Image 1 (tube, rainbow, N blue to C red):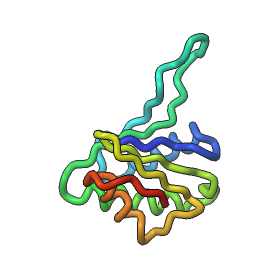
Image 2 (tube, rainbow, N blue to C red):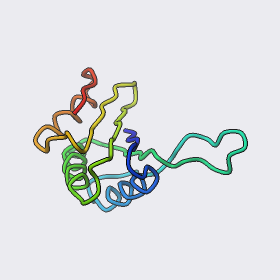
Image 3 (cartoon, rainbow, N blue to C red):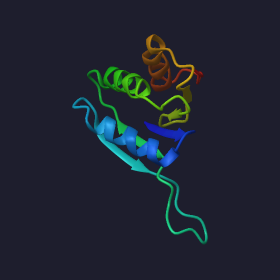
Length: 118
């Protein structure tokens, strides 16, 4: 699963989210990446968090962790675009996401349902 961070201070927010998710014992393979640098650029903008989810509650851990991360101060301008292998994309806006809906939206993104916005 790939989580792109937009809004706010994109790189700082992506680093913050990566550190946050790495602290979750139920999640594995959390890393930070970005597109390759363009011509004349010194390096890539690291704005995408990769998370490997296995069976056994990884989705619930991710949903709880994202809910808690969104609740931290200064997250109101952040948007996350969550993309699973195969293409389904879901966008979450910190201003509009409801804690009770987060897990259902993530499950929809993983099981192949059409993308939704929250």
